[in-house]
Image 1 (cartoon, rainbow over the protein chains, first blue to last red):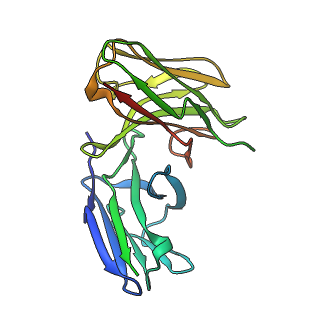
Image 2: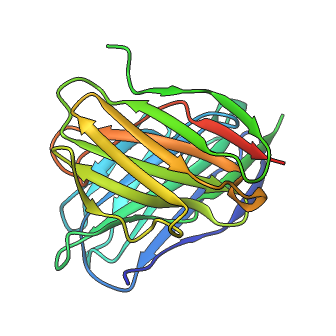
Length: 111
Length: 114
């Protein structure tokens, strides 16, 4: 079946440093969604990307969708302790209308 | 809007017992999902309903697991008999039309099987 791979699995940064998580698919995606799960919480929708090469920003967060629509990234500039959590991507394929979550990247931020 | 409601929030049971988890999706949402999350396996989709009909149950681990959606405002996930390896957080999520729309997750049920 379709695989959505996410790296890294863990990332520990000093507050103020940047952070990036990557999502890769073996097949072309029709869209990709990003979710954030705080420790002890539930996944919360952040954004959806649909167009090839699309870039969207939410304050310090920048989301990109690759030109081939097979990969995506989430970049956080100048991390804060409030950014702590696990970031998931979820991709939908064209052919079987299947959407699967990546394994997530767990971010910890040291004050 | 109250969001997706799940009950109970925590459940501790003994191996062999039946466990029933409940979910009330957001009013007006037509799709409902059950997920299981563990440290080892991450977030796994168990089953997906659209308009109360099960569409994809390929993620249901085995016959011990069953899910129903008798109406648009209620769903259950049942484990019978439960086993220690079923210990996990079970999330219910709903979306407006189909499973590729934004999914709104409930707070989850933390299940511990002793």
